[in-house]
Amino acid sequence: MADLTGARWHKSTRSGSNGGDCVEVADNLPGIVAVRDSKDPEGPALIFPRDTWQAFITELKEQ
Image: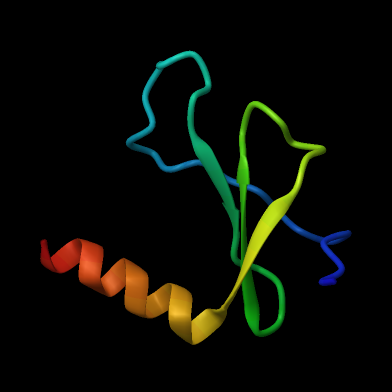
């Protein structure tokens, strides 16, 4: 399990004012990116290798 103690979580600037129904991302951790539900910050987080996350983001931008 990854140590998320130092994670700095942020939401997309495009998340708007939808009542908090978003995901938060922590991309300041070495080698990984963590994703969590903003409504449940103490709940589980998905952990991705940094290169996998970057490939995902690149694919989204190309759509």
